[in-house]
Image (cartoon, rainbow, N blue to C red):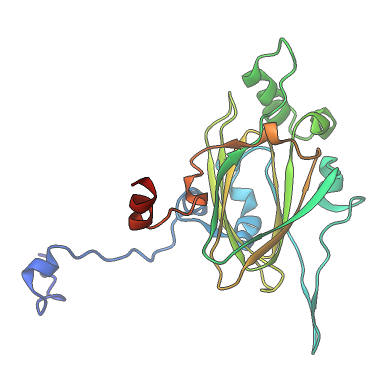
Length: 245
């Protein structure tokens, strides 16, 4: 049987019809959405079992619970170092800091250098740590490289991670985390290994406030930038022209 012509747009000018496109709202595979347009943290956590081929080794994404206190606000724990994910992987941050990102601002991709022992092939080192013995957390050199663990108190953070480590597949994870001010399934914390570049965008209607711990104290030499021009607010063109002349 011949398919009937699509006459939905017959009342629209041909020039406009030629430029039309419709959005596909069908639910694609979780792994594809994680590497593409992104998903909420809650869905990523819930679907973790089906993401082995899409997950970046060493990344941890774990849920947090926000308790509503009627008439007062809310309460939420950050973490306990003697239980939970940080205890399981043996990560005890040596420094804690806070940061604020204004609404609609972004922090471009940055990356911390991973520690590689002298005389060891980087690719083999990562395969040993994260492929051959991924549960042997005692081998991870937390004190010699910067791991990040991030918590979000307000706003919504869209985070993009890219694995740039030698010998491991280049995988992309894109997800959004809701701050404590927005209780729900997307309240989560994330652990980011060195060698994994990460970018953050404040996509909510309020400022994004975060608290983060690092496995080592701050070292400016370990702050590598990749495509971070978005952080530089350009002056208006006429201002620049005036300053240069």
